[in-house]
Length: 252
Image (cartoon, rainbow, N blue to C red; front, side, top):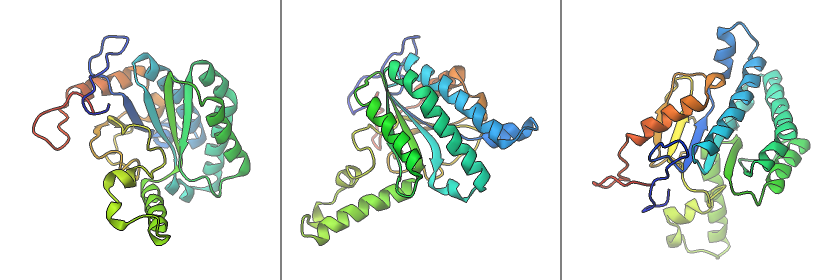
């Protein structure tokens, strides 16, 4: 939440709900391996979990939900698995976009699109264009995304402006650099959740996560649901957010 804002109260009575939740959806492969299933089935069940969590986010009064769907480092995975992931993205947009639009969900995509297959780029653009005016929930999809790459691209843009004489180097502040990131109009995440028990950001929203609360849960992503989201929010509500100061603030 912007500084000074009051915490939201969601529809089911939880106090201090975060305005923006970001999720590293981890553990699809381990979920499948534990059941003797192919990794592709884990990814498919992960999409089902995503549908549940998008619905739950709105029900819990969350305004922004960011998901880490495909990282810049995921290209090192086997080509067959990348193909499965892209196939799921295609099916998700083609089958779920109309429902998301009807539910008032706005889709935003962050990440590098250069080099992606043309039909993938077209689907991402379609999702953004169709839902542009929706206001119920903003679903931010981090696709082909890496935080270091995002920050480097912002620095390159500023460096070009300096080289072209359009900007003095002394004018480059943290706020200015932040305004050159992929979605500067979206507030920083109040809460970042990572599933599967791993405890790291893995190149996800590192700039935006400066004052985010981090909650790591042992649940693999396909098993993550509304109850798990509520538990993470309850943990968030116990935290005191000082933003580098001495007095806890009620909002971000």
